[in-house]
Length: 152
Image (cartoon, rainbow, N blue to C red; front, side, top):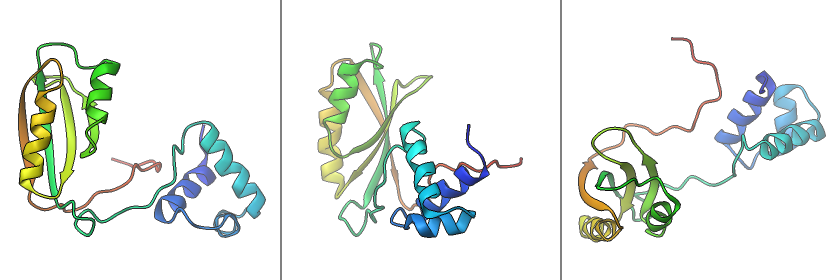
């Protein structure tokens, strides 16, 4: 169970994962060692999965963003399918879905020609029968998972 201190530590780390434990502790009224211990426990429990840097996709040459629904004639929620999709480096996310499509993917490429090549790779995955692609023209915002309680 997370308390308010844990939520604040996570929020601060999402803003800047390089923040020193001393600074984290000061922000929540703990020593640096106590903040370090809290973060360690959050990692051990799997609440914090990893620390990373956020890269601007356009600056990195990955300006084409597409969401692709994958249709299939078989259950796609197995390890073989997950491994086949994971092997395509342009796929950032893949989610099993309910409804007409079996999988929803988030794909970033440099060009629409590269996107087309990725779609051809997806069609090579066993069981795939079709795709529906939506190319995003602009992203208003993206945000990390919030650990705060949000009132409705």
